[in-house]
Length: 614
Image 1 (cartoon, rainbow, N blue to C red):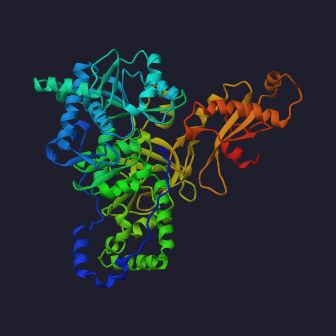
Image 2 (image 1 turned 180 degrees about the vertical axis):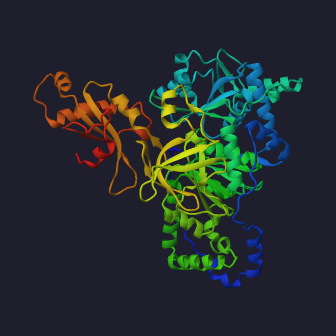
Image 3 (image 1 turned 45 degrees about the vertical axis):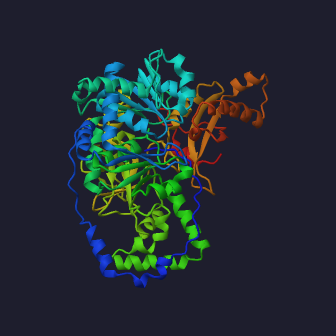
């Protein structure tokens, strides 16, 4: 599950930990009663049995009308605005009616590109409930990739935010197949191909008020293609993942079996919604449970937003958790409280074994920085340092890990909150099976998945689909791992060529290699993530075998220096980087003087090549 976010430096105040000094005054009997109230037996919860997202929509509309669904800041200095379920659901019906009857977009492909905002949630839900096929795009995509995605998906409508206006304006003339460009937070009537979202919603409301209930009556086939996620970039080499309502609903059912998410829970939305992790587990799942979602204004506002919104759960990438862990402990050290905190971790762990949980009281000062109510942190998208997960548990927060890919919509495994094992990627969810292909003596092998959350296939690419999904339905994940005796999965590496950045973004080497090899000056090349001694982050590196005769012709000379060869290739790379999203940009070039080691099918033996020093 690839995600790309830039983590800010968090600043925490000096800690005093008065609660620790007064720990002897805590009434243990009362604390035991509180602990008993939320004690979890080590058994699966009763799971929901939703078949479509529309089913969850009507269920929540009926059960939780007065609950708060979303908290959004209209302006930075203004308090959070709360939107109730009943108002959101009315807007979905009105906007869905506007899309299908007023703009006649029923069953069309609809691109959604925006930062996390009310308009995104509204648009996605309206499309899932019957308006058409949703195509969520990364708001950070360069203009050429946005255009490519619109063309590849054959979208006939684009819903976008004000902040994306410049990019959309640049692609309009190149995508004549798009009938409407629908701008969020805009009242403009139809003018050519442009129209405001609010206008479409209001026109839909007029139809609904006049008795049109056609949108509500649209029946959803659980198995029908309804969402298209592009996994990485938008060149011809990237893959489009086709999902259906059954995939998304099965994710909700799977989570409810393993995690006790309640009506009074509040998720804090930090990660981008164009990714299946946040849009499914961070939106559709809490929506089905009657919980609320607070929208983070931006990464630099994480702490003040959390203090104000007081969330109980947050979905993270490892880099975010590791950054918080590092900075909290730095502040503890500066406060001269390290030994006291370590001592209280041991004490509270010991007391917890006899059924009393004092952690939220003892570590109250840490909790207050996150709003005071945080009880669950979920990490996914990349491996996390087990020490960090253990620390999260030690201070009293349930630390869960999820495992999956966009291809599994995204959850295939999850650690149950009643048996959260730090270090494990989780246990196969209730609608999935996981097995290890050709395990070695350590039990390690490629992770195979069979699940109701598994995609319909890759968009317009049967060959690629057949490569990863066997005839009997097993998906080859490309990850290497093993299962313990209780069925918990541990990921130990990757068998595919995908480069996973520290913050969980997937980079497909073949995509960039294909672009490089279009240049005659490059005979062969390999993209890989190079390890650094001073950092966990991988450096995206191009190892290139130059086409010397072509370069000689280009420069008009026979005897070339190493620097001249390097400069020609590096100039090509610099030009290419301009069209790549920043996390994919090639940062380092290695010139290879001898041929690559190849397989019999003329593929580079990547593993062997990476071991070589240039």
